[in-house]
Amino acid sequence: DQQVKQNSPSLSVQEGRISILNCDYTNSMFDYFLWYKKYPAEGPTFLISISSIKDKNEDGRFTVFLNKSAKHLSLHIVPSQPGDSAVYFCAASGYGGATNKLIFGTGTLLAVQP
Amino acid sequence: SQTIHQWPATLVQPVGSPLSLECTVEGTSNPNLYWYRQAAGRGLQLLFYSVGIGQISSEVPQNLSASRPQDRQFILSSKKLLLSDSGFYLCAWGTGREQYFGPGTRLTVT
Image (tube, rainbow over all chains, first blue to last red; front, side, top):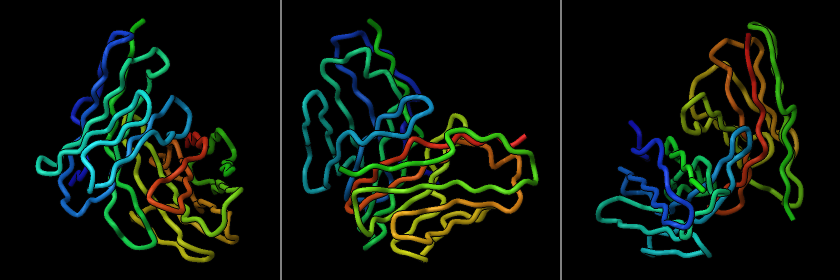
């Protein structure tokens, strides 16, 4: 049972336009959500996170939106740059005491065309 | 600042051979430590996590084991590798809700 889903395996966007990456979850106990960026043969890099008490968090060109009723979150990148081309993973966690385990989606490959 | 190291970066091992991957963290104390595997074309699967020295929890039954002999050292092992153990292994640390990943080890079992 996949609790975090990224239904689009890939996305292609023109440089300067907006990239929107989507993520759905099924577990209503999740209360913290994260986005990671991963280049080939490297470890994922933490990008941005959002707590379930918020519906939006912004950091520079990156904004994450959370719709709790729809169990949906999205990452907006504006403007998109060729260096943003990578695999993006969303992850979720519920408050589990000391462990803070993350459940990851399967990733979306973003290609930003110059 | 905190840094996380993993070695080796790449490894090619025959089926049935042992495995030892090491991960160390600098610049933080008493972190949670995690081992993940990314199989080809798939997401990140949590294998083990540790909240302290000697404390290991396994997420999936498998051919692998983990140990934490020191506060900032996490080791992934196997006595006999299987072909299905091939993948990209990632170590991560965290003290809050975020986790920070190492560079990973590409393991190919032949």
